[in-house]
Every structure is written in C-alpha cells, then in structure tokens.
Image 1 (cartoon, rainbow, N blue to C red):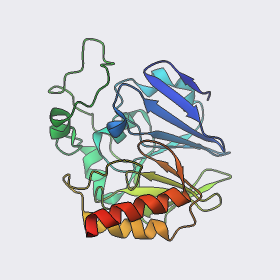
Image 2 (image 1 turned 120 degrees about the horizontal axis):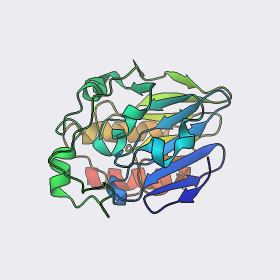
Image 3 (image 1 turned 120 degrees about the vertical axis):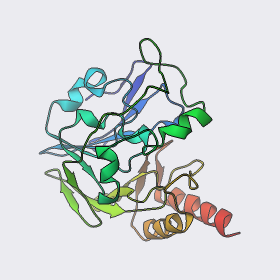
Length: 243
C-alpha cells in the first residue's frame, strides 16, 4: 500500500505496518476509520467505513494478500464496505445485525435524518438516504473476549468493550501497546445515549482500558493519541458523567 489522497479516499501510513483509510466525503464525527494492520502471513482490516466508494476500486492493493476483516461494532459508518471481504468477524452479540443490516439496526436511521453527515456526495446520481440499504454480510466467524487473531509475526487480542454498543470490541497488541479502540474512546464527543449504548458499561470499559499498558491509541474517529491522552480523556469523560 502507499499513502495518497484523491479527494474522496485518503490513505495514511502510520508506521509499524499500520495504515488508516478515511472516507473524506463524511464528516469526521461519522467518518469511521478503516485500520489496516499488516502481518507476515495476512492482513487485518478493522472496520470498513460507509462503503459508498467501493474499497476494491479505490484501494485495490488492499486485497493483494490474505485479509481478515473485523467489525468493531455494527453501526453503518463502520460496516458499509464489509461485504467486500470474504473473512468477516464480529462479536456474537452483533452477528445478527450483519446477517440482516436493516437501516434501523445499523442506525443509519434515524442518524442520517438528524445529522448533516456528508461533506459532499460521492455517489454517481446522488446519495438517496431513503433508498440506501446495506446488503446482508453474515459473519464467517465470531470473536469474543480474549480471542487471539494471529497475523504471522503479530498477535491482536480481542477485548469485549461494551458501552457504545453491546458487542463492541477493541483490539490490543500487547507486544507494542497499540490499542485499536474503535468507538470505545476517541478525542471527541462520545455517542453514549444512542440505541444499545450504556453509560455504566462504557465507564466500566474505560476502567479496563486504563489498566492496559497502552502506548498508542488508534481510534475509530479523529486523531491518534498516546497513553497519557487516553488517561486524560477517560478522566474527563468520567467527571462529566459522575458529576
């Protein structure tokens, strides 16, 4: 892969075999990062964005080696392109949504009616919110707390981290201290009152993350940050909820 920006899709190289793909047509608060983690034997893709611009057309080299795709959770801005991957993993609590990704289940409804989510329309002929439906993309397997995903020279451990959604998962690489946090924590407003969210569960998840030896956080939205910033964000969120 190579870093580039064509105005609709941006690919950033974050070193250490890590790449972030971003769909620039979406506002950052609903621009789910697509994280690519390269190992010697296969590649892991965490989340798959909206999918309005097909990844196999925009980033064909993403598919030039064996790939396993993991859905951190099943909101529309994280699974829209997941059907392009043959090997799809998700937590059991959200597997039924991948099998039947209705607009209500993936929360494109009512979200897209309540927010101006697109910076510009990337769809030829125009994006039609009323007509947009994700196709069924059943999980090929499920992952749960403590499962290890082997990529050859690197191992990612699955953490069940509910709060943003019931089956939300993060991935942690113990060898580097890299936390792929998805929507469990990021440097921005947390959506903790949407259907399926739980503030008590999110507070418990944050306590778990504080106990990890995190060196770098690679979140589902906004910028990458370090372990110190992780502690600051969690403490700020906790103060706001427990005040």
